[in-house]
Length: 91
Image (tube, rainbow, N blue to C red):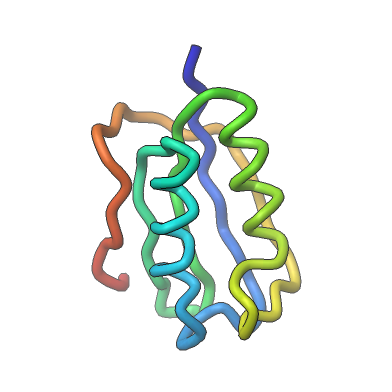
């Protein structure tokens, strides 16, 4: 069974390799979906996988890579079906 979640991550999360680090973590956890920077300074991601894998990447997203300073993570239901995990262009 797969679940899908949409994440919005706020704090010092751009310019600190957050997207690249999330891609690496997602691939290790067999998570599919995508991640991108937003113009408001946040990072947005869709993650899809087993409940355990999604829980693990959600936990990781609350701290992110070493240089990041996460202040808040908003998690809502996500939609879609994804075959891989990719870094998307900023919006």
